[in-house]
Image (tube, rainbow, N blue to C red):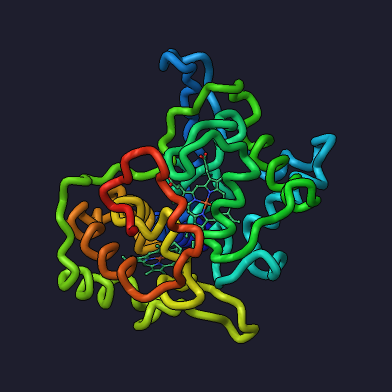
Length: 302
Ligand code: HEC
Ligand code: HEC
């Protein structure tokens, strides 16, 4: 009798704990990002010629040039601290090219190694990859060019080429670099100010100044002011900024069901982008040389 009771009690305890585990799993879903999704590799005609899966950093160790690729990866994440002479603000490359440029809609670098040299309307000529990287140094980072032969520039190139392993020269992966946004929408700055206060200021600050930790390093990057990107940066253009914000911000909020709310509409993103890009920020000395022959994009700032 005693044994039967003990067995019954044990069974009940098991049932209760299984129920509790199920309840716990329900209330605390796994918040890790899902594994990367394979992307199509397309040739110049748009024909699928293969598939691409973003590699994990663990694979770097086995490369012949592992040290250089690893340095490149570190420089992209920790740019302001590691390259103080070349960075004139509080940003890292990773602030805009998120997850070291490996994810669609977050300004990824997967196609970068295979699509330069290429003609670029802004300078009105063909440029190579070091020139393109230096474009972000002098505009997005409001800083100074990195010499092409420097160990650091070579490391960034090595990282970007490694990322594009398996993507032949001239081909591209299907994942877009920038988020689609309706460029026919007109911005409403007053509405943008309200959205900023409600959804952005908690991290980026009431005055767009970002937020630093106790060691004087940025946790959340600045959106305007002296420590932000200058007026010549791609992010200073309305629809580039809105596309980034719509698909990536506010950080930590999931867009997809079952938990996501789809927080930003295209109009919200355009309005809030108008609000922060038009705030005071550094000027860009070379702006007079931009778009020397092609038509300026409609959201060009000068
Ligand atoms: C403030 C945001 C921002 C920061 C910071 C930034 N970039 Fe960019 N970068 C962009 C945007 C936006 C584009 C696309 C620009 C366009 O289409 O005009 C871009 C484009 C590029 C491209 C061209 C990619 C391609 O495949 O055509 C490279 C390479 C690049 N950035 C490298 C860097 C590096 C290296 C750093 C750090 C030294 C950096 N960027 C910092 C916003 C940024
Ligand atoms: C939970 C904190 C958080 C919130 C809220 C948030 N951001 Fe961000 N934002 C970040 C972080 C962190 C980065 C840098 C990304 C990285 O390093 O991976 C970033 C990067 C950016 C960048 C590019 C880098 C720069 O400084 O220019 C822009 C633009 C931006 N956020 C705009 C917004 C806007 C607009 C909102 C509101 C709709 C918003 N963010 C809400 C944390 C946040």
